[in-house]
Length: 347
Ligand code: PBG
Ligand code: ZN
Image (cartoon, rainbow, N blue to C red; front, side, top):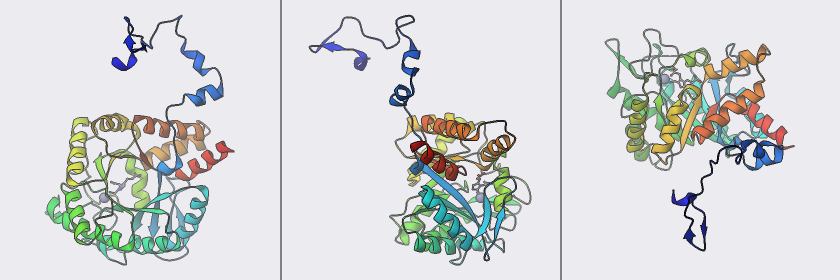
């Protein structure tokens, strides 16, 4: 209340001044009458530096395969990815997130932690060619496991603690390859502490962890699983990813990841979970990331392709909404388009 009082000669007025005078004294439309005025009082701005653009890497050479459910997004070999990266850097994108699709999948997720795994090789090549580009490595096992789950399977169950060791190993391999940020997406308990310790023991105490803290078991990952060929061969991910109905539990996950040493916490998916983003924003001073996931992207692309929506306006409106909710960082497949649009709008 104190701040809302206007004082004259340091003496508070008898009546506190409220900003919510009713009509006709207050007319909200006054400040909406002209574009420069609207721009002047605009509260939220989407910046290209906030965005992280995902890439899907396959083994081999000279291949770029479109992902049918994600128009504009491809699986590609490292050489082709380097070509795309030079374009997106020119467009203004400053950060990428790497996913790997190995030729050979097994029950130990070898490709996830082997120095010659596709993400590790790509990271070395990318950081050599473009040292200033921020490379985020998604740390998970599902793309590399023959069964498609994010952890080790014993007696038909995804077992937690044996998985931690292999996740930590994957994170260290990614850091050794030159990854700037490690982003564990598996949802095992205790993985942030395990990965932090492994990174520190390997002298990567300077490498931050962006934790997929509140990751829900969402139908909106459907197109990604085509892109990453990571759909589970049996069952689903509900024994480790969160129930979409649970908001308080999401905040507990976030608190735990902060306590275990996360540097950034993430909420995923983004659009149906902006209540969680906003509650997390009130709860913590940590940087918050939101993952605008594949299904969210595909729905927009499909409607736009049909001429049903104005793609640019819808994308900028929804992503600005995420920033308004409290996100500092947004992982989005729209990042390249947004970079172009924001540049056009400046000209
Ligand atoms: C792997 C992973 C997934 C996504 C990011 N990392 C899929 C899943 O958990 O099944 C989803 C990303 C998207 O849908 O865009 N653990
Ligand atoms: Zn996974």
